Length: 287
Image 1 (cartoon, helix red, strand yellow):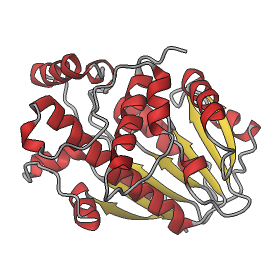
Image 2 (tube, one colour):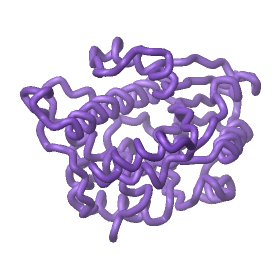
Image 3 (cartoon, one colour):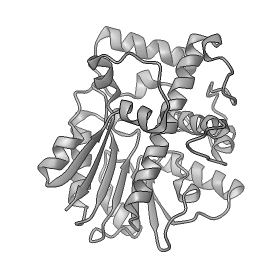
Image 4 (cartoon, helix red, strand yellow):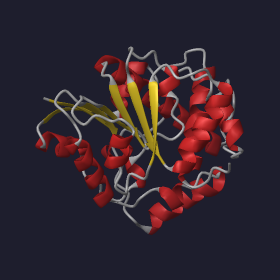
């Protein structure tokens, strides 16, 4: 099955997990990430080994390697949040080629709902059936678009709105318009019972300027990853404010916080504008 469009970015994330898994100091070990990349037949230009000298590789490859470093920290942070929450109902929206249903040691009786497009979930299920053992959780696949009505599909798949849920929005919001982001956050709030939790990667603010378009087009041409077609130019809602207004207890985690926590410095300007562009994360608990 060909993987295209936003599915290419899911392959790029899997490639980053494969690279992270190869590091001697790996934050995440995903035994199946490389197989997913190979099965996709997408030419994702990630190396399979971390270079001895980062400064010796071309600039585009440096950017991809640092992106993989970020993905490693992001993945580990969300894994840690799910372990700490220890809820039995997990909902991963825009799940892509995520392998948490297999990778993590879930408590008995945990249901993991993975929602993404039919093409992506079909590809993941078919490939993992061929290369991996059974998931360690009760995996429920929901083939739906988050910009269309999706709650009823979740319920039909066994989702219980009356049970506490741990929501995961990882690498999803940047691809949605501001109205779609707001609607998705409202749906999460409406479907959450007391005790629910959320871990959300913020969407960076991308203004639709010639400079933004040129930067994204240049990166897309150099790497084959079509961010110029997929990333929404938007002034996004702040998930922290939205959830706090709904009565959730909210905490904010910056990328710099993750660099310190996992001892993985990124080569990046620490200016306020850069920090804002990188977004960071929001964690929240519904009382």
